[in-house]
Length: 267
Image 1 (cartoon, rainbow, N blue to C red):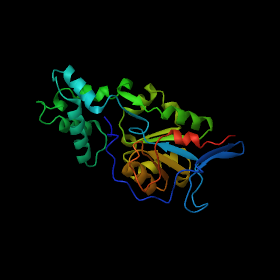
Image 2: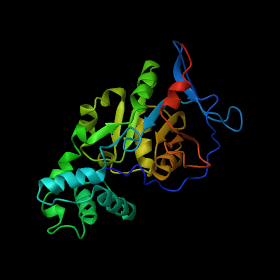
Image 3: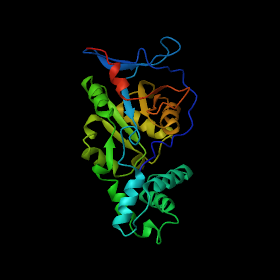
Image 4: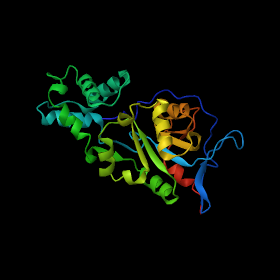
């Protein structure tokens, strides 16, 4: 139960960044490894000393989909024959209508009830919601994107500090441990712990303090134009939109995390 990777906000105006002829990491024994992003003007963008990543839609996604998981759990609880595709559509609609969503268990219960509205009585929150909530805490409900581990391995080999900035709940840290992703990150910043969710600049500022790196020297990568790209820029971070479907325009973006690895420079 996380954001639908396909439900992105509108693309924001670009920040002067273009990708990526000199998007590199350089490492030496005398300096901190850095990225630079190409810009329309030379030497206008601060060196990048750390990277932060979104999780849902960036590092991993529900398997096979939110609707499939909902339908499977519902079937085990006597509500058989529901269409995963229909549930995906209803979930996407409910997700788009949410306001001030804080990723609490109660908030998820309301969202699931809205997804199942008209399909069952009593609503899931009074029946099988706890089973749905638990299901999304289990590693086999998720798939890591193919480009993630090669990119993280390449960055780790260059000693680039990495962090997570995610709108999630208390299930995220155990889930990242189960998927063996937690070891890549020096810090994991979760909205339910900070009390602020992206695109609030507070959660990004908190990550910068944890990394002990100035915000302008951090590059945030995520799949949401509003929460990740816009939120990071509002907090003074550099931002890069992960646009695997190549649908965004007028924004600094990459279509695969492997594009980070491609621009690594040798020791």
